[in-house]
Picture 1 (cartoon, helix red, strand yellow):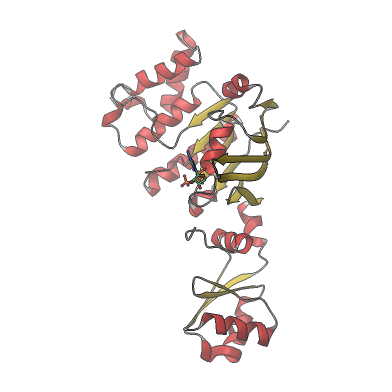
Picture 2 (tube, helix red, strand yellow; picture 1 turned 90 degrees about the vertical axis):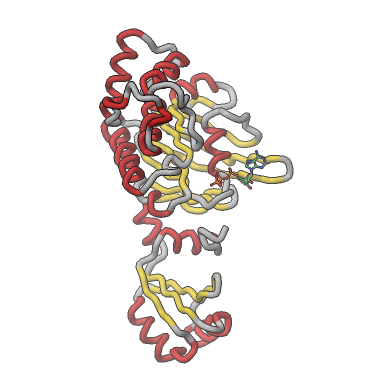
Amino acid sequence: MLAIRIADVRYRYGDREALCGLSLDVAPGETVTVLGPNGSGKSTLFRLISTLMPMQQGEIDVFGCSVRTDAARVRGALGVVFQSPSLDKKLTVRENLRCHAAMYGLGGLELKRRIGEMLGRLKLEDRAGDRVETLSGGLKRRVELAKGMLHEPRLLVLDEPSTGLDPAARSDLWRYLGEVSEQDGVTVVATSHLLEEAERADRIAIVHQGQVVACDTPTALKSSLGGDAITLRSADPKALAAAIEEKFNCPAQVLDGVVRLEQPDGHQWASRLFEGVGDRFDELTIGKPTLEDVFIARTGHRFFAE
Ligand SMILES: Nc1ncnc2c1ncn2[C@@H]1O[C@H](COP(=O)(O)OP(=O)(O)OP(=O)(O)O)[C@@H](O)[C@H]1O
């Protein structure tokens, strides 16, 4: 049984279509990043999976339970970490965890055990009695995670979990997510608009304008481009692209004033380009394809220009 089955989901806010037939399957125990630029529909998808908004069209099942007809069971299987802080600043770390546990009917010795375990795993033991308002951003995120994991969910969904974290705290967060996935078999689905952190997951679902445009392991996505990414800067990029296409009979794309090609043998292409059209460009760069190159290849847009 799949951990999540998302089939042809559409969602509109008035005239604006935020999800346009989005489909994605997630297997139990996987970590998946839903990667997309601002406005691509990630938070809308997160809200639908976590039953915070009613579905309009399409289906979402969590461990076989429909978010439409079985929302209570879906919620029982889910741990949710929101983009905006959900902690009570005036309460201590332990008090926040206790309040959350009450909503799941947890109490007594079992609750004590779970709180102790979460505080230990997230290295929060010595801060358990501190008010949340006195904690750093990274520590607060760890408390959010402890809260999301307290009732031992089978699936953890996180909306932009590294918002406001510095690179070290972000790395800690992903190490922890890797641990819960490997040690506890928890399925992790996190939205992100950060290319570099998306690569920490087993698979990446790239979302553009409310649809999944590519979904695979980070390595497979990058190797799907089949070669090196070559970029050329020129005073007249359109004329340069036209000259390359005519001379070498290969596609050359102009994006944000830069000419781009993808070719399997970048270095040989560099000498060909210098010989053939060297007088038309000022700078040539060759690199292994990045996730941004994958995004450009699949959408025709730059990731951060959206
Ligand atoms: N409450 C709302 N009312 C109207 N339009 C909305 C609402 N929430 C989101 N939208 C629109 O739906 C589209 C998708 O937004 P969504 O927040 O799901 O994207 P996102 O990928 O999470 O973006 P971000 O990374 O900026 O959080 C956007 O065009 C957004 O403006």
